[in-house]
Image 1 (cartoon, protein in one colour):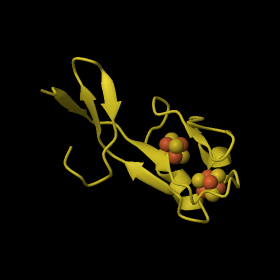
Image 2: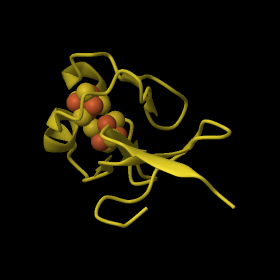
Image 3: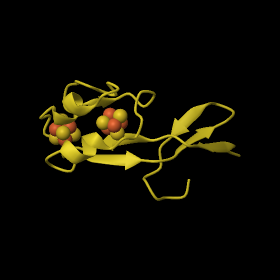
Length: 86
Ligand code: SF4
Ligand code: SF4
């Protein structure tokens, strides 16, 4: 049995469409996007869900995830696609 809790947190996910242009990294005020090998790395704990990175991405590679579900026994997070019921 899985025990989950839905937290009111937001973050983003970056798809393979990313061309590593760096626009989102420069735009992100809280420094939630870090340079990495193929695409930026998302630091969920820093993201405030402002959506500015989504606006500046020229290829539509960034998607907001608006609910985080956590297994309260293991504290393992899962990130459902925005709009899906966890
Ligand atoms: S939604 Fe805002 S805070 Fe989160 S990664 Fe994008 S620009 Fe940064
Ligand atoms: S703005 Fe879009 S294409 Fe550019 S690095 Fe960020 S996710 Fe990749």
